[in-house]
Image (cartoon, rainbow, N blue to C red; front, side):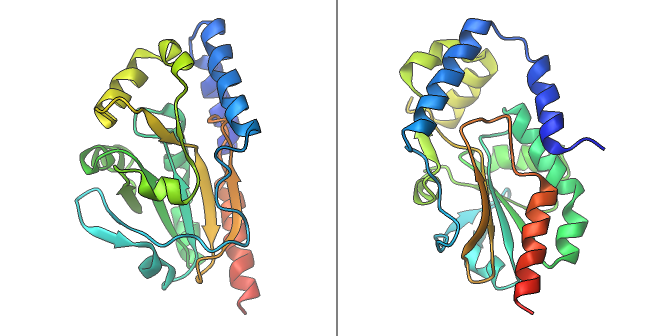
Length: 218
């Protein structure tokens, strides 16, 4: 069976985009990462608590999910991102194993609840899909960044349209794709944070971290 990142690599190879555009985008993202502008919450830090609406507008508090056990917290860019779609679907496929290990999955994007609902329905996601429309949670987790002006002309039309809808003020800020595995006290025990949006934490790696948390708790 292919791993999530093998599937993502195949998707990346199939995307038709002029080489100059791909190079400009990749160089800009590499510079942002090298400058440490979006480091993300580190292993050993306590993750900030938050309350966000889910896909039907109900409020979900992270600390309440943590009271039930470890949480795998996924920040994704939006339903317009094909790599995010593949990622959330892969975690849905592994959901029974996470539940068996006593963990909860929580996905967060800057999209509005209606768009989160579309994502949830499209992939039959049976876990929390939350909306951080003002991006305060993304900022608290240090994964929020603004798209550099020089790469905006190289974006695909579907991306431009999605970002214009997502942020009508024209800011066009996004989360770095990031996954944090939190123990029940909210401490980060494992993480994957990178500007390379075509790689994500494998569900198997997140599940391994959850099982290690459970084992250490006795």
